[in-house]
Structures are given as structure tokens and as C-alpha cells.
Image (cartoon, rainbow, N blue to C red; front, top):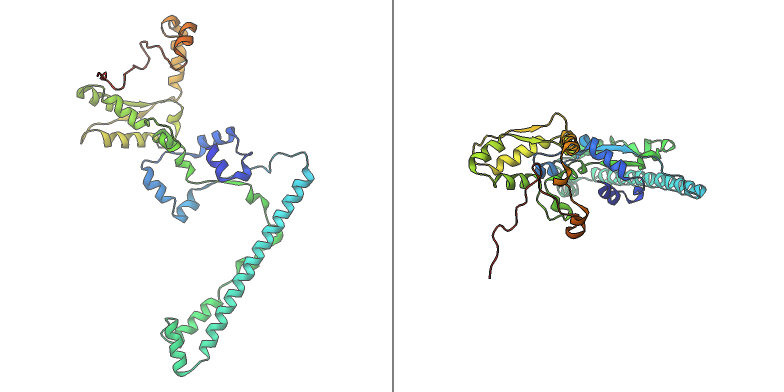
Length: 298
């Protein structure tokens, strides 16, 4: 999330701190049941305006040369005012030109009038008059805008749009950031395939989601949908959320306090010889499965 927002808002890269990005992930993200269709929904402007989260940022840390920064901010405000006024005048001029051209056509008679009406794809002079009234009735909201109430705070906002689903999607598609590993659903399917068919049915009917990521909205529906796609037709599937998302960490802490550490911990000699990536297998640890399972021989 931090990298995405820093690339999206390079001018606010310092304000997008790691703690702020973590808060955004915890409070404003959710997991889509169908990622592709959800991404397509974000292309719809009404949907975007309804779902986007606008987060207000402070004006930033006060630098040493505050006067220069303040002057630069005033210049940016004046520039924004000038651009808005220029756009409003251009729209007004374009509207006036269109009205003048239509009124000139309205004054024509005979063959010239019918030829110009055909060029405009207008059937009759009455329809032309309706178009003139409709264009003339258009107001100019930009000109009516009070530029003295220009709010610079609008330029210190983060718009959290499709990032709401793109960031947690990494749990299921880590390849999106170049990590060559399987996602959560792929790993779950891989583990189930290690067991006989009867055990697979029992395990798929009792999937428990725990840990900090289990608190992300939509993860239960997504895992259930992905698992249903990988299981045989009409298979029984039950995915549950743990009552306490941090129960796995608390259980590991209690087990480590009561267990014999000599059988589950890595000694200094093992660390120096094997490295930090090695984990000792014990009664509650993950099992090591060599890949590929068959040894290649010449």
C-alpha cells in the first residue's frame, strides 16, 4: 500500500508513512470474491465515487525554510485559480460561438437553410430553435464559483480507490509484485492433495481461518469460492473464521512457554551451519515435502 500510494502521489510521498499505510490496510481494504469482475466495476464512475475513500492529509512537516514553502504554496493556489478561470472563459466562448452559428443558420431561407439543416442532421427549423434554447439555457457553474473560497485542503487528500482490493489480493496472487510463490488458495489446494480422498473431504469441510489477515473483510467468501472451484462437483465445503483472529499467535506463545525448547528450537551451531531459513520439525510444525518428490537419476 505504501509503495502504491507513493507512486500515485509522489508529491505526498513523505506523508505516506509505513504506519499510515498500515492503518489504511486495516481500516479501508477488503478482499473481492471475484477479483477480475471487481476491477471492472471500478471503471464505472458512479461506482468509483460511491466506493472511493478520501483521506485528508496534514499540510506536511514544517521545513527549515518555511517562508519559501509558504510562498510556493500561494503561487500554486494562484495558478489553480488562473487555470479554473481560463477554463470557464473558454467554455463560455465556445458556447457563444455555437449559438452565433446556429442563429446565422436560423436567418437563412430556402435551399440554403435546408442544406445547412441537413449538414447538422436537423429535420426542421423548429428543431433547430429547440437546440438553440437548450444550449442557451445551459448555465456556467465555473463562472458562478467563488474563487475566494478556494480550499487548498482538496490537494492534500489521498483517494483510496481500487487499492482497496489490489493490496489484499496479494494474499492470493503474490506474483503481482514479482514473488514467485503460490497464493493462499493454491497452497490450500496443494496441502489437500497430499492426503487421501476421504481425508480431503473431511479437511475441506473444516477449514479454519485465523491470524491477523483473517480480519480482512471478504476473506471467508473468497477462500470458499476458490476452494469450491478446486474441489469435485457438489463437494461439501465449510470455511470458518476464528473467534479470536490472534488465537494462533496466543496458542503458539503458550505452547512455547510450556514445551521442551531443545526439541523445537534451533541451536547456535545449527544456525551457523544451516542458516536462518531452516526450521526444526516437531509435533506442531509444518512438514517438509521435497520438491520434486522423485529423485532425478542419470
